[in-house]
Image (cartoon, rainbow, N blue to C red; front, side, top):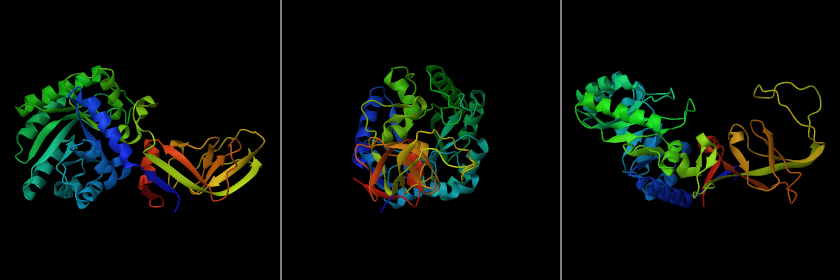
Length: 354
């Protein structure tokens, strides 16, 4: 059945072992982030087998999926929680990131009712302008946490690059360390974990530029795809093809390379632009924007290039293929993070393991 996403847990396990080895040399622990593949249990288990002792996801539903699959490892919510999901969060998880004092107090109430402790990582905004407290708000948050009996502060963390595109630097990592110190002052006790971001922060690790006080990273893309989107580059020594999309060809014929007639907006409200390259051999594959982030796909087969897509069809230029593609043949693609996220979310894409 196609389209099909081939997943190789063994390569993910090997990526995890290697990245944890590099980070561990600097005393940095890595938490595995499972949101990019909807917390698929086989892939999540590969992260654990590779050395991740704690898993994080941005959806409570995904954390429940892991619990129901038999995972006993600590699980944390990676997204700041909604007030409406706190009771379920306490039921299935061991902790969460957090950024609002009011949410801390509501979580304390839910944890108290359940008779269960909950760990929290206080998020600091060091410039990317997504979630997080400013440094001068940290002491007050520490005092709120000090008043809690069931909610425990495990550390401070920050998000880099996901919203504002801000790159991790020694300067903003040192600002995170300052946030830790201010939080500890309000808390009245040390703050153990300083979580310096995600895959994008690995460059500081590899170049020896990460401040020594930073002792944690939360990584998904690097473990899964061996890639750092913030720098648009591969991470040396890691597998890039643990996820491969296979799509079936449903049409092959020669057509003009430029549409004929007046051009308006396509099905997604965009006005396409085409270069006239004469008549070219084209293939249409049965996968589309309802399944995948098309600009997140890279053809694996030589001579194949992506021309565009509609909801259900992917149009390819195959003129330069060494062998002419055939009806019913298969084309393959590696993925970026957005491509992986969309394909693993789609119910129309079969998932298979190699």
